[in-house]
Amino acid sequence: MKNFLCLFAVAIMIISCGKKSSESSYIPKDAIGVMYVNLESLSKKSEGVDFKNLKLSQVFEKEAPKEMQDFMNEYVTTENIDATFRKEFLLGYVSVDRMTGTGGFIIPIKSAAAFEKMIQPLLEKSSMQKEENVGKNDAFTVYSTGQMAIGWNDKTALIIGARDYASTELIDLTNMDSSDNIYTTNYFKRFFDTDKDMGVHISSTPLATLANSLASMLAGIDINLENNNFYYHMNFEDDRIHSEAKLNLNDDFESLIGHKSWMTTSYESSLLKAIPENPSFLLKVSINPTALYDHIEGLQDNRIIPKEARAELKQGFRNMNRGMKREVGMTGKDLAEVFEGSMLLSLSEGKTIKDTIHSYDYYTDEDEYEILDIKIPNVYSAIAIKDKAKFDALMTVILKKEAPKATKGKDYYELGNNMFAVITDDFLFLTNDEAKADEVYANGSLAANLSNFEHKSYLSHSVYMFMTPNATEMYGNFLSSYTSRLNSYGSFSTDFSTESAELYKKYFADTHYFLDADGMESYTYTKGENNSWINLIQYSDAIANQAANMAKKF
Image 1: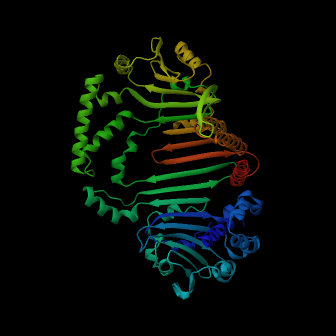
Image 2: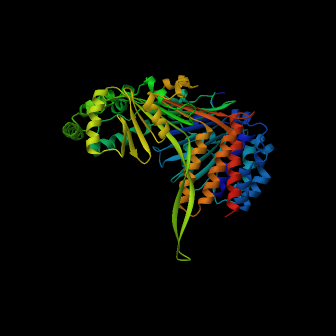
Image 3: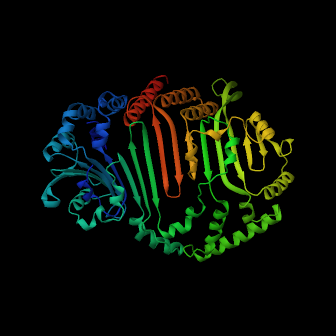
């Protein structure tokens, strides 16, 4: 394990030091997961960063065993790394359909001699068995135990882990026929984007044979598990971190989830008038409730689902609709038609309240009490109403069954726990800010609202989330307040959360998340003159330094 950690550290250091990656030919087509890191691009983007002097590196070296420290100091130098590794693509994979299940890293190197020279001190102190002149063209040298193998030729190094027979697995990979590697799949060329810094792909196809047989045997499910693919890419741009994900499902899974039928992008524009301007956090969701209900109801006729399960689903719908008709005078379909399907939720800085916590000191046999400041954010939510008549009928039933804490006027209720509800012709407004509830009740909207929201165009996505650095600080304050109530290390948690939030605000600006039927995308903007990759490195290092300093206090 110590030796593997050393090699992993070396892999990370390579980054400090496209094109089609020839090393991909060592990845088997039955890999369920594949990843790559563009060493060349990240190396260029991190120019000027002194990795050896980062707190992360110092902590690693301090906590590592002495032999690892000696190895890192003597052999893992910039000169050795430049002489040993090609800055192309670091690859990784996981497979579940091979002899013993494998996973590993595939590393581009400049020469066998240079790589062996770097890792020889580790190998000499290990109990690994050595094999020479093995693999394709008898060109590989392999060191191995039962569960781990390291092998290389003049261009490529492989680090393989397996439940057993790791050496055999590694040698088999080097002899793999071209028809058995990842290039033969229908997704790899689309996934391997040389313009991105990192990528991860997960495919269900390698599981299909095993899982299809198991599913049919256990439940009678007749479902195609092939060709479900998840793609994820990340790129560190000058002023932002950009990530995107795509989920491509086959027809069987599409019919089960049906998200393309009920995920929508439209929203009721009047909702903007109920949300205060300048939110620290904003969430917008758009779905079609009727289409969602129809999809779920339609599953009772989906032949992919076992006959017995479909019968139970049909009976469940029948019982639900009967019960709802009896209790609220509506069926499930009627209820789905009450709401338009769009909603907004926002948070902004709220107020600080005093709270008393009680604890018991087992050493003194005394009760202790402490007064804490609890920071509560203001919460605002507006939910669009489609059919006001049906909504009023539903509210009449609800109010008969459970009366609100107080009624402040027609369609204005205090719900308890300092929450208020205001009903207009267009939306249901919920908040813990009584002043804003009063304003919406009096005017039907807020004077200072989101109608001129700077990022209004982003609301065209099915799900949109906007978060400022203040939201991170609010979350940290809220979490640390309640953490202080629950454990004796509250002061540590509070200080750490507060300082972490300040560090985040130093390096990062706003974040935008978009989710639609065809995938997800996000942007996190950074601050300062450095690119986003350097900012992330410096932020991570600052967090490590903060944690080390905090730990010294305890």
